[in-house]
Length: 209
Figure 1 (tube, one colour):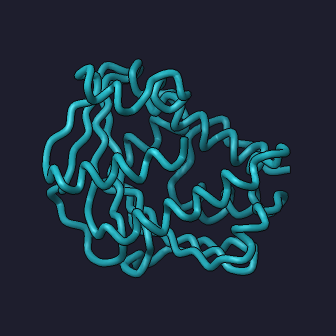
Figure 2 (cartoon, rainbow, N blue to C red):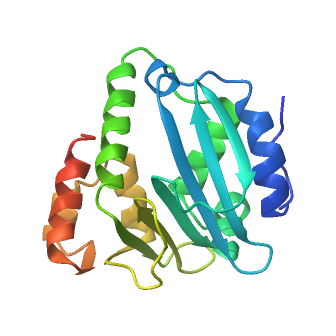
């Protein structure tokens, strides 16, 4: 069993050694095993770089190199990535990633339909061809942000849409304790940028329930 590193390791060691060894123990949902997915990660800063995650016939391959053809790419600063993995800075996001790596995808009964919806949502997001940035303030270890390049191609340094919220509200939103629409209407979720794109993102997000 691949034990989660107690102390921070380099992105290279984590992504190219620990992640493949960890996920090798688990079986992807049937829907994912029938799909070919290309996902990407770009970490900016010392020790960063680009990685791609190719999922084909239920097998995951992680390798360094251009993520330009990835359907969706996560963009983050090295310090924020490290903070999420080891310092609690990412809150429920970091804990969720660690949980998947330690325990595998949720295979409880009734999850099949949700897995299918997630794949459908990924397809729709990839078709938006935009950069979305989420800024979380006031959390443990300070403010942090994570970006998402939706669709293949180069990553613009200026996001098309920026979502801003507190660490407390981010936690509640991801746990399902805070409704997305209510968060926007109640001013808990700040939005700036392309308003048409915001509406499309909101519509797609609703499909996850």
